[in-house]
Amino acid sequence: MKKRYLLQLGAATVGTVLLSRYLSPRSQAQTASGEFDSNFEIVKTDAEWRRILTSEQFYVLRQHGTESPYSSPLDKQFADGTYACAGCESPVFSSETKFNSGTGWPSFYRPIQDAIGTSEDRSLLMVRTEVHCRRCGGHLGHVFDDGPPPTGQRYCINGAALKFIAS
Image (tube, rainbow, N blue to C red; front, side, top):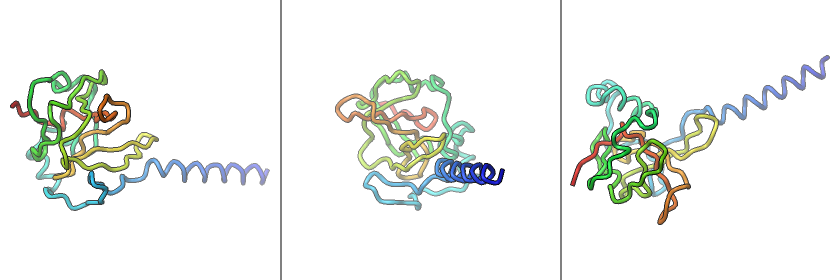
């Protein structure tokens, strides 16, 4: 009986340690150049962000949320222009790099140079690469290695995190 108890306790401990790796807080934001940066150019309190963002934008940009697939009109927007961060209006993607991924979220194969940063996201029991605005740190979405040429990357971005500016 004692042996069984010790084995169960050991298995529970190992499981807890492994699970905590995926549920731990996000790592510090990393810029596109690979440098860590927790001091963004634009810093506001939650109250200040709530005053300038809609509730959905706040949820996505500041709380790392995800909008429902196919809910953003920007998913089917293919006019010429620039996609800017909805939080600080910094340009992050060009319409020239947008494509229809069929996922229900606006998708791009390349960001504007030096416009984004990335960090490791261990939520949902998996490891993903989070994409955030370089200037304000707002959560934009994630990047995956299943995109089209020439980069092979798919920047899967929440439409609520973007503002489209027509050319």
